[in-house]
Image 1 (cartoon, one colour):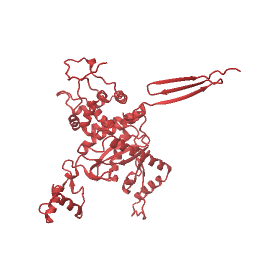
Image 2: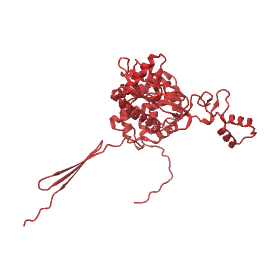
Image 3: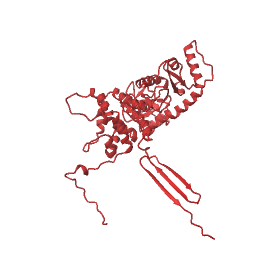
Image 4: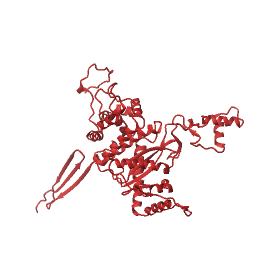
Length: 453
C-alpha cells in the first residue's frame, strides 16, 4: 500500500446529500428524543410560546423546542455557559440530531438563547417544568407522600471586589483609600491598603450596606466550600420515594431556611396538585427537613395543614418557655413526638441521600454551581429547565438504566455453565448478553480412551 499524503483542502462546488456526513446517533439521546416526541413536547412548547410571538408578520423564529433542548443538553453534558452549549452542539453530530436540525441548518447562536429567554416569561419555563412532572407521574415516579427540603449555594456572576456602598455608591477600594488618607497616608500603595484593611476594627461586609452594581439581587454569603462570595440560594423539594424534584426555587442567599421554606412548599404543593398527588389537610404529606428549618412560627404555620412536619430540632440546654403561646407549644411537641419514630429515622436517611444527590447532580456534575447569568428571575428560567433535565434523567434511568449519556453503558451479563456426564465428558457453556446482542460459546471436552490390559 502506498503512503497517502495530505494535500491542500479545496472546497467542493457540489456535494450530494448521500455524501454528507451522518451521525449514527447516540443511544441515550435517541431514546430521550423518542420520549419527548411521543409525549408531544414540541407541540406543547409551541403552544406555550405562541402568545409571545407575532401571529402573522415577521420572520418565523426557530422552534421553541430547540431552545429547551439546548438547555437540557447543558444538564446532561455538564455545561454551564451558553457559549459552551453552542460549541458542544456544533461539534457533535449526535446532538445536532437531538436538536432536530436540518442538514444545512446551523446550531443557534448563544445570543439567540439569551434573546429567547428574555422574550419568554418565567411562566413558560414553569409550564415546561410541570410538563416534565406529568411525564414522571405517567411512569409512577411521583408519590407525594414524603417530601424532603434542603438548600445549597450557587456562586453569582459578580465579583466581590466590585461591590459598592448602597448609600453613597463608593467602591470598596475607594473606601480604603479614603481611610488611608484620613489616617495620614497621603499616597497609599496597594500594600498599605491591604495592611489597613487587615488591621481596621469593625470590618464586616453587610448586605444592608453593600451591593453589586452588575447584579443587585446577588447577596454576600458563605459558600459550601467556605469561601465568601456573591451568591444565590437554590432550594429543592424532593420526593423521598422516587428522588424526583417537585420544586426548585432560587432565593436570595442572605435569607435563612425558615424564611424561604414557605415559598418552596407553596410551589411544591401547587406542582403536586397539578399531577393529582397534592397534599391536603385530610391527607397531609410528610415534610422532612434539617435543624435549619426548625422554628416555632414555622411549625405553627404547618400544624393542621397539608404538611406533617418531621423537622430536626436542636438540643437546648435550658427549658423552653412558651409565654402563653399554646399553639407553638403544641406544634413543637407534636413535631418532637414524630421525630422519635422509626419512620422518621428512615425518612432522614433518605433525605440525606436523595436531596443531597439532587444538588450534586444539578450543581456539581450538571455545571450550575457557578452561574453565568445575572438577575434572580433570569437565573430561575435557566435553572427550571436544568432541573427538568434531572427529572427526565429519572425516566431515562427507568427505561435504559442510566440517567446521563456518560452513565449509559451497555449492561453486560455473563454466565458460565458446566455440564458433566458419567463417562467423564464435560461441556462448558459461556453466555454473554448485552442490551442489544447475545453470544454463546460452547466448549466440549472428552477424556482420552484408556488402553485395555
